[in-house]
Length: 305
Image 1 (cartoon, helix red, strand yellow):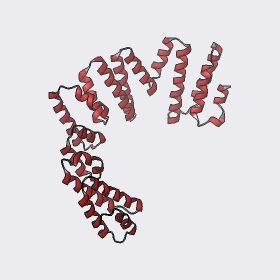
Image 2 (spheres, one colour):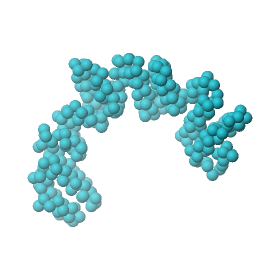
Image 3 (cartoon, rainbow, N blue to C red):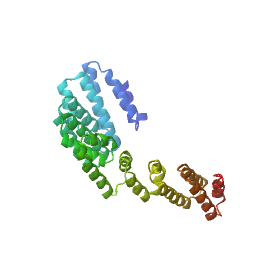
Image 4 (cartoon, helix red, strand yellow):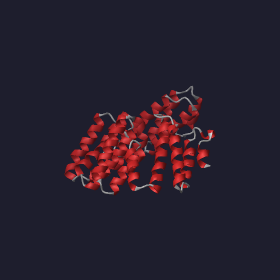
């Protein structure tokens, strides 16, 4: 009944329901005859999927995983291993194979499988999977004591935007060696013009306030996020950056919601110690936009006059 229901026309386009029914049916295949029936049904099912499409690939991988669990339950270890190896083109199977190798302390095999996955998915433009394989390769190197390779992969992962590897990478170097590595990494980020979240996270982590200030000067809107790290050392510069940000935001504001946002930033300037500057820019905006009554109404609510 479950197998029959899985092919019901009303379930076309609902692969998760179909897969759930097939998985439930597999749990009931307790005899050789029922197992044979289940295998024939799922083989027909998979052949009817559209190859190459995202939905077809998704269904094929999920179904293959159900079949793998089915073989593990009723087949031999050799059959399960062969099925796993034959499906490494699916990311779920490759991850399973790598984690199995790590569990068995087969670190070279784990590295090989991860490198193979990186090459395969880089060619497909699947950057997320490439990062996953690289992270697993890092883990294999860490466990096996391949320190230089671990450090190399760690640097790549940090430069690609994963902050979770930053502290372990730093801790893997003696203090006298780390500075050169650290400066080289920051230089690469700056030379590439890659002002990503990890760049600023590193600057905050290392209290690189001068570098952080230079970064915010190029993007004044980021002063909202970073002023708590800059205000003590650079109060004047912080207030100027707030003023630039407020003026720019006001220039593009044309709805009440936008006007309220400008006022929110002015309050933030006041919170940062810029009481006088908040009053000054409020008066300036009132004078600059006499024909925007809604804007003036929001500015007057600040009570800075």
